[in-house]
Image (cartoon, rainbow, N blue to C red; front, side):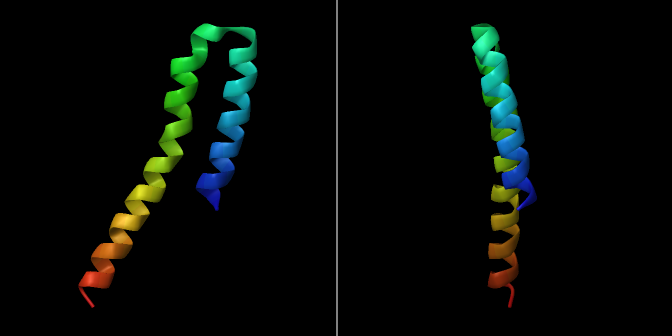
Amino acid sequence: MASAWAEKEIGSAAIGAMAENEKLFGKGLILTVIPETIVIFGMVVAILLWLNM
């Protein structure tokens, strides 16, 4: 839930920044992807724990 909330906040801020300056697209995209890495890491840990049971 926390990563979804963070992605929402970062995404809305990135859209607002890009509305004023289109050159910020790359930085906004990178910052939006960062919370997704937490989800991927959690899924990998869950699979590893499941396989060890």
